[in-house]
Length: 418
Figure 1: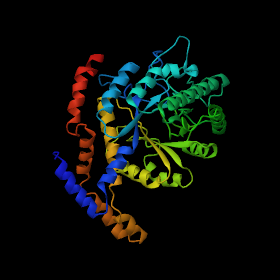
Figure 2: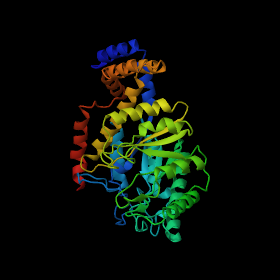
Figure 3: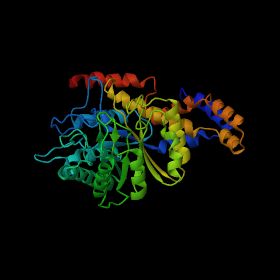
Figure 4: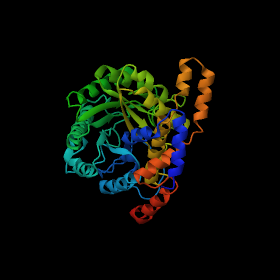
C-alpha cells in the first residue's frame, strides 16, 4: 500500500458516511480539462522580435531569471510544467506567440505556418490548443484603441488579425481533434472622460461583427468575447465593458469569457455563473486572483477560488464550461507560478466534488441554521488525503516535493538564459 493509501482509505470511509463517493470524485476530476496559459512563461511579450512595447493594460512586474525568449524555450518550459500537473490539460496562446516569422508578414497576415511548431508540439503531447488575438503590444494600438479606432485603416488591420486568429484556431481544432477556443479581448478605452462613448462602442461592435463573419464548424473552433472593468491608461472608459460583451455574446451566439480579475473588487464571478447559465449554455472562465483590480496574481486556495469552482460545477449541469488560467507574475519562478496556480484550482474543483449534500437538503427545507452548520462542518473533512491520492495515481510529486523539482530545472535551464 502506498504511503498515503491508509489515509485515503480512512478519508474515503468518512466521505462515504456523508454520502460522497471519493472514487467518483477522482474520476470526474481527472476528466476536467484545464487550460494552461502560455503567456505566463514569456511575460506576455510574444516572439515577433519586432521590439514592440508591451501596451494595452497588460503590465507584468518583476524580473525573475529565466523568462522564455523563444517559442522553443516556452515549449520546453511547458513540457516540464505539464509533467508536474495531474489531470487533463490544454494550452492557450496569444496571437503574437508565434514560433516562426516571415519577412514582411505582420499580425494581420499570420497563418497556421506561423504556428506550425506549436501545432507539431501539441500533436506530440496529444493536447488541444487555444488562441487569443493580441490587440496590444503593437504600433497600431494607437491611443489605446484598436478595433474601436476611428481610423478605418487601423481598424481593418486589427479586424484582419482577428480573422487570421480564428482561421488558425480552426486549423488547430481540425488537426488536434478538439475545438480551439478563440477569445477576443481588446484593451480599447480612454484615460480621461470621453465625449462620445457610443461611437466607440458602435465601432467596436462593427469590427467584431466583421471578425466573426466567416463561419467555422463548432467541431473545430469556438468564439468567446471578454470584458474588462478598466486598465492602465484607460481608467475612465473601457469600450468593451461587461454589459457590452454580455449583450454581444447573447445576441451573436458567442460565449462570454469571465475573467476573475476583470470586475470591481466587491464583485465575484462565482455569483454570476448561475445567472448566466439560466439563459446561455457555454462559458469561458479565465481564472486568476485580482488583489486590487486586474493584478493577475497566481491563484491561491482562497474563498473565492473555492466558490468559483463550486458554482461552476453546480451551475453547469448540461452546460459547457471552458477553464483557462490567466495570470502573469514575473516576480517568482514562472514554472512554479503555473504549477501552484493550476494545482490550486484543481484542488478547489476537488473540494467542490467532495461536498456532502446536507447543506443543499437543509436549504430545500428552508433550514438555514442546518445549512450553515453543514457548510462549516464540511470544511474539516479530509480532502487533503483524497488530493494526495490523486497526485499518487497521477505519478507526480506532492506539493511539498514539487518545488525542489522546479528548483532543479531553474538551476539547469532557467539560470542560463540571462
